[in-house]
Length: 355
Ligand SMILES: [Zn+2]
Image (cartoon, rainbow, N blue to C red):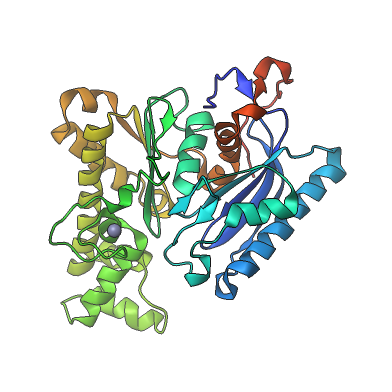
């Protein structure tokens, strides 16, 4: 697997696609992690999977054409990050929640690769993220990492002893569906008390809407709901109401933090990671208010050897993580493409992308 001090690399750039529920991103990512010909647009979810595939093919084609026009770098493969669950071996999206029925069992990677005529690699977005963070981000030089994204949902990716943990079906590491409260609310997956329903943006928003609908004593939340109607309450409004002293919002936010901290303690004990890397919109917005309680809980309750090693740190690569991760993803899926790194001229600039 590729890491920052690896002696192997790719002989050319990768066409990178980050297919998200909200945005589509493409670029030509070079073997050093810098990229050109970046494109971004909203995902046309309402028009279904075929329209989305048409859109990404058009964007990838445009990225390739722009790179050709400006210097002739030809991509050698296609690296795709997409929401799970998915099958990385067949390149198929399985049943991604919130994307609609047309994405069910969609052979995403083969359909795109057929048009572009390139070898492909596909992984769940959080798996690509942990590969990228290990290569050029917050997990550099470590062999044992856990990545968590706390956003609309909560996802995870694990590298253990230098290998991406996939299990026999390539779907291991769904850390958002750890149970943190046997009597908690029902998760989007149908089970009760999962981390995702307690601490994700969609889970927090749903708990708040239910509290308002059921007539709980939540004046702050109710005022905001009236102000923004017909738009529904979102996690940001719950945080706003908590800041203003609404007791129900405060309880929801506090429980979200404690649920996250409790899951991180379990993750540290189970995986013995060097780093737990936390990314995603909620993690960025809350910062230390999310990570601080998790660190404190690990120090207080994890096993001694695990807690002395593990550091809970913010992700370093931001929104570009899926584009950067295309390189280690392709190298992992296609070791036959690898060449010795000393045969490739070193880039004079550090391999971080700034915009
Ligand atoms: Zn769940």
